[in-house]
Image 1: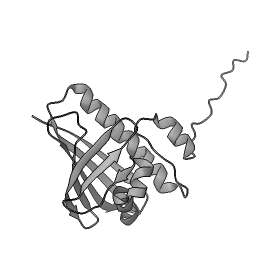
Image 2: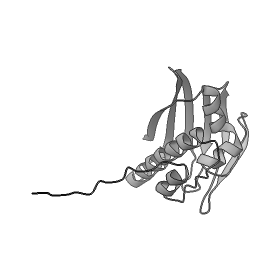
Image 3: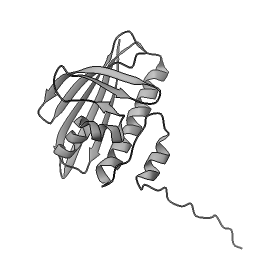
Length: 163
C-alpha cells in the first residue's frame, strides 16, 4: 500500500520568494536542514542534521511551480517521494506538499513525518517574514526556533477571583 501525507499552507509571499526558499541551499538551511541542493533534474542532493543525513535525487523541476525529489533517510529499503506544488493565491502563494511512497511504515512513521513537515512549514513562514536569518534544525523543538524568529505566545492573564 502506498502511504502518503499531504500538507497545504498559504504564505503571504510571492511565488518567486517561496520557490527560492524551497530551492536555494542558504534558504533551505534556515528552515529545513543544511543542504547541498540544486533544482536541476538528476541532481543528487543531501540534507544534514546533527543526527541524520537525507539524500535523494531531483526528479522533476517545472519552472517555479513544481519540484519533486526522492527522499532517502536511510531507514527504509526504498526512498519515499517529496512533491512541492506552488500556485498563486490572492496576494500570496499556496504551497502543497505531498510526501508519498512510504514503504509500509509503522503508524508512528507517518505521524512523525507529519509533525516534522508541520514544524518545518512554520519555520518556513518565520524565515519568509524575517529579514535576518534564523536557523531551523529538525533535531530541535520548534518553540525555541519560533521565539528566535520573534513569535511570542500571548501572556496568560492571571486568574483572579474577587468577591
